[in-house]
Amino acid sequence: MATAEAGYPADDPLVADPKHFALEFENERVRVLRAKFGPREKAPMLGFPAMITVSVTDRDIKFTFPNGRTQRLFGRAGEVVWYEARRHQPENMSAKDYEGILILLKDSE
Image 1 (tube, one colour):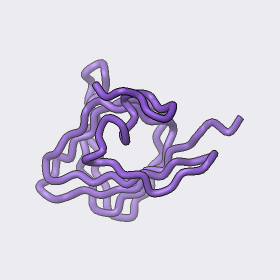
Image 2 (cartoon, one colour; image 1 turned 45 degrees about the horizontal axis):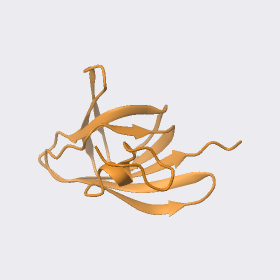
Image 3 (cartoon, helix red, strand yellow; image 1 turned 90 degrees about the vertical axis):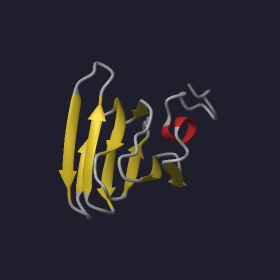
């Protein structure tokens, strides 16, 4: 397991999986990441705050949750989706690359 950096938990995507996640922008309200997965690539279990995602490519992603439950998500390039805060392990189920933009919301208080 990765160690925490800059106040973020060890399951933060940038700490735990820099191969698939890159920081695009950050301020006091949002953190914007770019996710890139090759065909059938999988990340470790990661923690995410509430977020909005924008798929750059078509999507066939499987999320595995800490309790073992899974969710499969299909979508088209350009689709925008809202997610509540959660931990999951993302996996690209497609034979094609996946790319998406994650807009992670920070606590505004």
